[in-house]
Amino acid sequence: MLIGRKCFLIAVFFLGFSVNASELDIPQENVFVPQLLASSSHLKFSGQQFIVSLDEIEFTVKSYDVRGLPNSLTPEIIEKFLNNGYFSVGKSGEDYTLTANFRLLGGMPPKSEKTLLEKATEGYGVGALIGMAAGGAIGAAVAVYGHTTAKEPASKK
Image 1 (cartoon, rainbow, N blue to C red):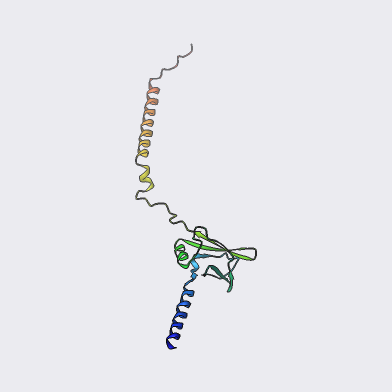
Image 2: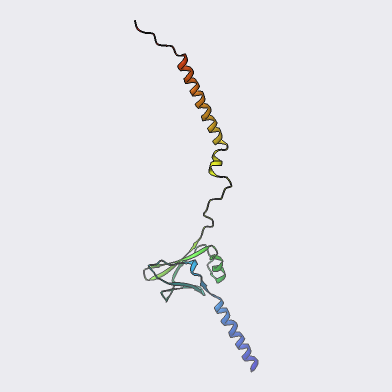
């Protein structure tokens, strides 16, 4: 009889643990709730449904869009998603909706070792500077030469 009770208690313990293990509280930094919906919010995943708590009142999310995630969601899959994604809560009529959004990694241009001035003065930039300087010098020389060798117009008699 004592062995039966111990087995029963152990089974209840593990059953309770497995039920709690399928529940996941989603961190606040991974949930976007517009200020118009609630001043405080909390989101959790329990079983195969999402439960949102808005101003201390719990609602079951009836419609959620989690494109890009497997159909059978588990807490492990959601935890992996939260590494580079977040959920946004919305409202459609009287029902609350949930959308999974992926974050794009990066966002900054790659850092270069050279400054913009250094890049401008190499390659094509140097060729353009030399070309402009040479063209200007040749143009000035032609103008001076043309002015000194020009003939005076014949005076009218």
